Length: 416
Ligand code: 17E
Ligand code: FE2
Image (cartoon, rainbow, N blue to C red; front, side, top):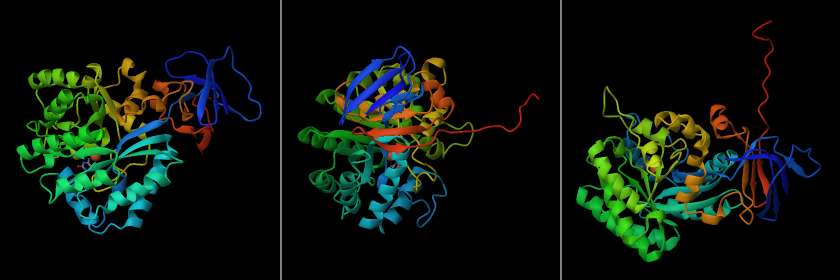
């Protein structure tokens, strides 16, 4: 497979990218635009990127909004309650069918790497069994990492510790947690020690829903970061949401950021989800309820954006398009300066790949997997301004998704 007339991020001019089998074999600058011959893909000056990444989603809950009741308050805690009602009725086939529908939405938007949280606070571990099958069945479209996510707590849920261990024995890839939901601060802390021990013993990655609240006293991030630091596991640990950081005062944050840098852990923000779920106990002025994305980024920490939900008890919208999240996130996080816009795709590609520890399994370079996406825009800035879509998704050297370019024509001129 050959692609010609492609633009690459951070480079000037046009490029030719060749693949053989499932690997990239050549990335070469072109002196001028070329005309495509048969069998050659013409990028027509559009931007070729490695696949978009979804670093944080809940595939077991896809398309359950309103079942049996809608989340009327819009809070995280009512979401957990509504999900608890739906969870009691999930079946193997129902979960698989909804998860596959979610994966198709993601794949249609050029996403090929996905980390999903799966609720393991269920004595039958039914959702996990379903998602382990989905992980294999979906390989032609995406690589799936499964987080064993204890939605109702490790310490506060009956047999929570045992369920976590069983979930890892069954084949979950990543250890999860939810310290701010545990009944007491002490339980939140002990849940983090427990899950970090498990991850270290088994050589697994960690991704914790951490401080997903506007409560400025929710300070589990410092515990997670310190655990990551002393164990030397920072690059393998992710703190998701950390919305309480949007409510911490600056004096505490100046101390906290020293620790975060020493630990070197990763961050996922889900800005559309957080702007919807947080701020619910404020009147006015009302907090944004998102973590300090720009500040983490400028401090040299790895931070990326995720969707979190596709029509579930926590968030009624969502369509798989991570570039919609990027657009909203740049607004919500005050990141629309030129320097942020010109490299904004980092937040949904390179940074997310680092969070998932994809290493040399990701990126446009000779020898890396032939997984590529063509966006209908020449660069990062235009991609977000135009709300560009993925035109092509190439996986293992083959086209797996194709979208027709947008064509619009006005019938009249504004100046006759
Ligand atoms: N569960 C949770 O604790 N937080 C969320 N944002 C979602 C599920 C979607
Ligand atoms: Fe989440």
